[in-house]
Length: 556
Image 1 (cartoon, rainbow, N blue to C red):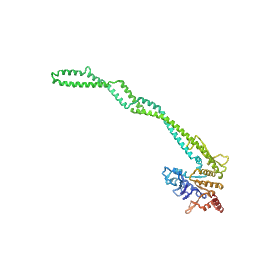
Image 2 (cartoon, rainbow, N blue to C red):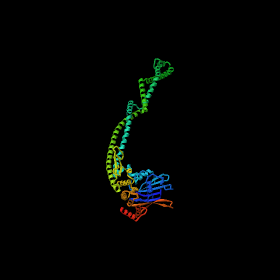
Image 3 (cartoon, rainbow, N blue to C red):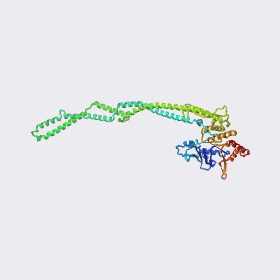
Image 4 (cartoon, helix red, strand yellow):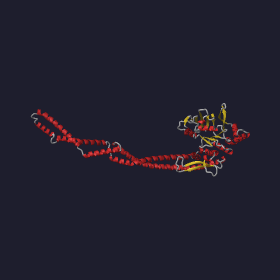
């Protein structure tokens, strides 16, 4: 609940400190005393749009601080999670309004955005006025109010969870379908490439081996003629080797006749013959190496060219072609697995869709019951508020094609103030006074199903009096059993039912050169006198005081 409100330098308020209690509190005062200023200041603290005109004349800035006492587990704790804002039993909202129009917002002295402040404040305070276009008059909130009245939050959360599961399943299916579609588009190429590379069957290091063999064969072809000529000189008809053998034998036969003379020559010839025989064997080996099958060279070149062509085609080194073939094989395997995964995800999405449909249908059925019950409850509140000829309806429309986190339904509150007229939206059909009474009736019915801890009603009794005002006072008092209720009122019947009473006055200050708004909490006698003023006007009579006492006694 709102525990304290501190205002500095806002319009006619120079300095104001107010403390509030639980229950039903009213603020009264003559027209122009500053009641609207007080509510504007509170709205500023709750994140309303700033305005440099709110700053008191001659000052650089104004400031409003609202202190709230929070029950355990209040929604404010969850809203502030992760924002590094310490929160205990009290929550302090502070707004600084600069004269140039800029504002600064703080929560427990930590700087926050105005948007964050408004989001937090919406869980703390609801402000209702006869011209209020938010809260209960906003169709965007009506479905949630139907859920709240019927206690359908668990069912609504179940629909939200099933919707999230459905969307996750659909996103997973769409992603896999897109991946498989891409793979399908490339499957024919992958299949062809895999078959082509598999037929080629590249061996590790094959290019280097083939290139070396081809080079050897090509070089051998060029030197083969010279090697043959060398062999002919060594072993042919004109070969020197037979001649040297013949010379060596003739000299050996003469060895006995002149050994000292011939032996060196024979020895040298033997060495020469041995060298020539070695050379002959080497030439034969070389010639044998040069001799190759021309078909082998052709096959070698064809294989080498095929490898290099494939390497260019796939822009991949020859040694990496086997790995590329394996990649295409893996892609084809993955495609087959992807088709199976698509089928599995389709089944999962279908199951999620069925679960969502069941949850949403069940919620729609429950909402229909809650909507009709809310209609009956609000309708029962209307006659005492002098709206006995009016009708309240909840226009609940189900659209099974509307798959959303909130289910199949749209809801809007409609009213008919005169028989025979067409029901229409609250803001369009009801007059200012009627709207205030409709809102009060709806709020009373919804209060037991939960509401903001603090409810503020701004002159919702304008234009009504007598029994209607008394009925409104009764309902505001009933609401105060569920939440803290603050009401600005001109109706003595409403004021008489309050537990706490503040009077707002405007008076001259200083040397009388300016005025300021003051707020005073009234005791029992002062309260009776204020209600008498509200009854009688400027001159308070004995009859007015007696009537005021009677109202207070009746309300008690």
